[in-house]
Length: 338
Image (tube, rainbow, N blue to C red; front, side):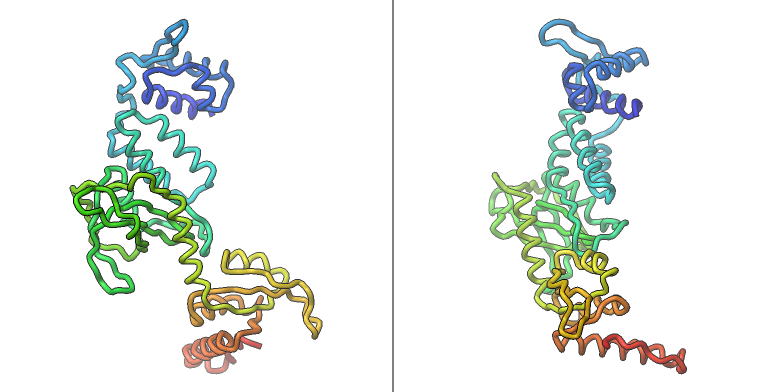
């Protein structure tokens, strides 16, 4: 839409000393004549811009590139970017919006915005959901990253309730769950010691404070690689228990999609008894967790092994039957395993 392009053009003018029609065309992905008409439309609408002719010419804002035509403060700009990076909308559209917004920001705001954009990851598997609201701590952590600040918080983890003081480096989501990758600052300096990088679940972070202490990533820190290594490590822990399942063909895509990287199709061929249902291997971090996930697929899948997963499913079915028998004594309990 043209209105959307005009707003983007205005933001780009605000963030640069000047811009040519060709540069604007490249940014907005339109033709040069269209970009030139957009610039002329802004001028005719009363926006204080003017062209300079000849070599080195272009379009400029009267009063300089830092004129705040939008009225946005730096905090408001960061808040806007935080909201976009947390959005669960179409990934390509979100990435494009972040890229354009960062490029269009006034120079004083751009550095912090670039840090937020580079340090925020949206990942897909581990049970994708349509609407995954981020924990309150996520926005505060992103602002700390923008301002190069250390944080202090209480964390309920495997070691119990502990106080943590650290440098936030990456905030990202995997499925519906948000994580923080952070490391304490090296003694006497503000750079994080990435050899002590740790992963925290954002929903277990409480009493978060952004400190006055400066803190930033070490030189050469590779955020995508650090995130990928975290995902690989967690995947390994999540997949330590396995089960083999016969799945109805109509449910195959849904089941493998639900388990994501923790599902692998083994065979399409029928077994010795002529069973045409494909075999799928699924994984989780504990037997009881795997049984709970598979219980919802009882009408579409049958666990063939191992025995401990079948036993956990049987126990779960008996527990459900006992819980509801008093309410419906005449209704026989459904059997989870054939």
